[in-house]
Length: 237
Image (cartoon, rainbow, N blue to C red; front, side, top):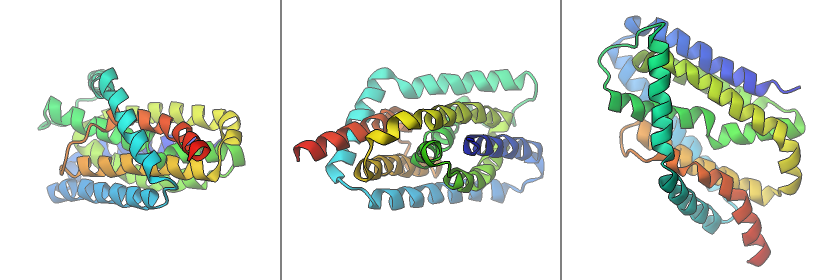
């Protein structure tokens, strides 16, 4: 029975609701410091995953081609519109906190959407549970996501809770589709896949910390390309 995606989505949902409810009671220094901590944690996890890469050229090629496809398809803009729509829908029920511009909202929403729903850890964790029934990876991720959602909901409001729906859909699809995907993979392909996911997590961390605004959403196709490119690399090189 698949349980990890439900636990992870629940952590984001309740964390976001709790953070939005307590937004006026959280000191400003906490609001400022904690996102920086989460950004640093995302970068650290990304570096660890990148360090385990099996074929460095595969990671680089997947990242370049994936980013190119994403730029041509305007994925970042599409997800930004999704975030703006979610904000408008949620504000009909509960108003968003004041003091945040539309541009800043879209920047943060896209970053945490990738962090929650499209990280290498979440994708691999969902696929791993689908094949082995082991939900420990997603459960561990849920602890971090709960507090991350709570902190970002302080500034973004209840709209952060809508990410739980996207996260649940993505992880359930991967978990149930893993029986078709995983038998065709090798440990080297998985290592390359995780390394590409780590690269996205590193870029996400830099974006959350405000160091560099990488178009992370436009880099998402790299995750799809990672395993096929890895298989071709092993076959010919």
